[in-house]
Image 1 (cartoon, helix red, strand yellow):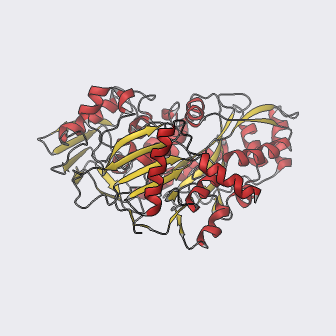
Image 2 (tube, one colour; image 1 turned 60 degrees about the horizontal axis):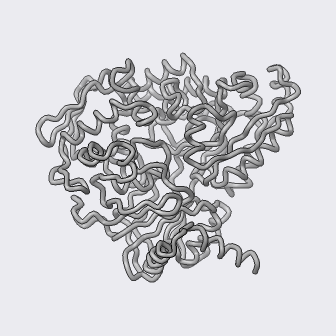
Image 3 (cartoon, one colour; image 1 turned 180 degrees about the vertical axis):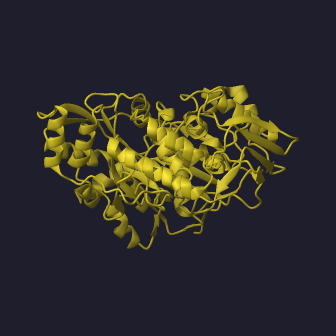
Length: 534
């Protein structure tokens, strides 16, 4: 009984409102959602967004919201990563793969009334290309740099009339179309970002999406509402969506059970069976396209020594982590990309759990007496790691068994990401949900020297893998690309900048009244077709 009372208190307190007037507003929204008196969906999630400008971040909590506010030239199919028309209704590549011509949708408007046209597309790409890795980290990762950089893939973006855009590339890029469909390359209103500037725009976003921005209460909630002038007839079906931040997994599930929220992500695998047995709820499985890992910052001693990194891989009992925290809804990770992605090398044998071998490697590296280190644990649940702090405790014990003393530390989520990206961590827990289903989006983005300071948090660099990644980007023959990526995975396995941990099947749960919800493998869920039938 005491546990039940405490759980109820946690669920009730998770909103964090400090002003009585705001509490009343939130209560009204919850009551409306729970009673079926309106079409408001309350989506409980584990953490707040760090920005509402998708081009300025790399984390999924932002994209959960922005995919409903903005749109990209191309989009992905409902439950996969095949490319489909978006703001561009058709496209035509040249025979040499260096020119792409896009015909745009007509009659589309941004939320501020600005017309969507070819010039708007040009201004968005000019904005990103003239930035840097701190302002637009994903642009650098996917297009080889910024304007003036030697590796920059996009030579020019030009408008030919109101509804035709032409991209010219410096070299063929096999994943180019998939890159354009990624969340962070959504087209924003030029009027808005030119008038507001970057910092204000990321808190007052303006796109063409089915919903428009209403309000952001940091670490509490983000509210979006139906855009009445949306260009796709009959959509969206909901009037409003409220994204509530509830960091504790149990409190979030309690809120769902109590009818305070309608949909929850970050469901503990251990709760899956009870949800399936609850007639008022339904369980959703997100198609797996992720990896959770322990990153080792190779510029910091002793992780600049490959033998130490290999020892770390032998020291950690991955199977016990999966058994304890994933309830069978995950597979042991061997490579930095999941088996669901083309080019996965299934001939590589993972590092086995072998503490004695780990000790031998430490002795050979000159650390036979062990060492002290910091182990950074994620403060929020992620799709690839439902409870980062608990997993860190298991890793801490595994490392103690081979003489390594690991102090667990953490930071607020945005700070955690910022500091880790600057190379401030010895070892850090993190992960990645694929953005476009291409191996380039895992291997090049996360482990190439071009992306140090943006998505390559380990600061790993290797001349041979760099050449393989660039060649694979340029190669349009899919079989040849696969062989290049398989070779790169062999090198990465030997160099061991990561301890790959798990490929998970992320779980969400929702009210039985939800219809039309299709969890997407990228982790970004478009809610335009979702409805509540009460």
